[in-house]
Length: 400
Ligand SMILES: Cc1cc2nc3c(=O)[nH]c(=O)nc-3n(C[C@H](O)[C@H](O)[C@H](O)COP(=O)(O)OP(=O)(O)OC[C@H]3O[C@@H](n4cnc5c(N)ncnc54)[C@H](O)[C@@H]3O)c2cc1C
Picture 1 (cartoon, rainbow, N blue to C red):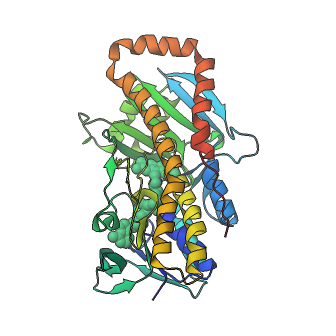
Picture 2 (picture 1 turned 45 degrees about the vertical axis):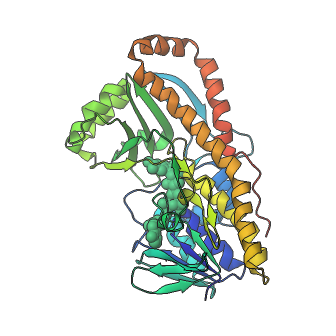
């Protein structure tokens, strides 16, 4: 019987499994999908996430898999550049880096598989929890097998089955947006510049960057309920062009044929008031699904993993009681919650600014004109707001 069973081999589950087996803890990791190439996985790692990987001793993995450092952020408002900020923004921190998740997850699992303490169940979903005397003692797999363990970790993402089965409630933030995620060809100029563009014109906004994968631009289009989305992919080119400055619009029209069918991503943002029940804890998106704004999800998830490792390893290396383990589960939430609350608050503030522009059409020209007049002050405030989202709010150090 493993000491820990982890459900979900996303960034949370895969890194936690590796850290635990490296410390002699036996782990079963269960992943529902048969490979890691699912339709969409976030790519942006902030300095806080890169620092977490470094503390885990995994930094050199990045060198071996497709990744790309961002050189700058540029905000374009009303087809004109409002400001540009170079990366890295802080002295002594690495620049925000885009990392292709499938090879990252594959490499993490390969590393874990070197340890006899590790067992991987891939292509089978967890259907339910196993309980004894109101305590979770394991999981039931879709193929009928049971896995018993001292601690069950729900790292199964924003639609977590573990959360539902443990009766843990997710408080969703009221305004969920949807995003249409496009990929399209680059022409070389975006590759060499490596800028993340935030583009807004009228009530339309999108973000665009060159992804970790060679030659592909990613474009995330903010979608409102009234939007028509049944266009053919190529028909989006003039729509993008109508929002973008001339030089960017020209590119969209030129590569219209390369625009791939978009993926619709329903963004869920929220937080569980309680992340644990006796014998089970939620981590990463399962406990606190994050908005895609300023790429927080993977970063805070990796920091959850460090804190969970600090609390669980010393107990699992000794003969800790159930009460001691449950106290540790509670302490993990207590230590991580302030950063999650703050990150979600900052993400909501960024989202509200876009919402004001969308709702109040009559003030838009004044705001656009004013913004260009006050660009230095706006740039300064923007940098200030990014700081906590980039480096984290609390001190997170791997201690075991
Ligand atoms: C549009 C968008 C853009 C984003 N961009 C970024 C970004 O650039 N940077 C960033 O940091 N974050 C980003 N995020 C957020 C980020 O993707 C998540 O926060 C992060 O992936 C959470 O990791 P996780 O391991 O907790 O969950 P997930 O990555 O969701 O992994 C959960 C895993 O559990 C598996 N699973 C689910 N149910 C079961 C089950 N019953 N049994 C077994 N396995 C199961 C799933 O297959 C999956 O592999 C973005 C999110 C969105 C929506």
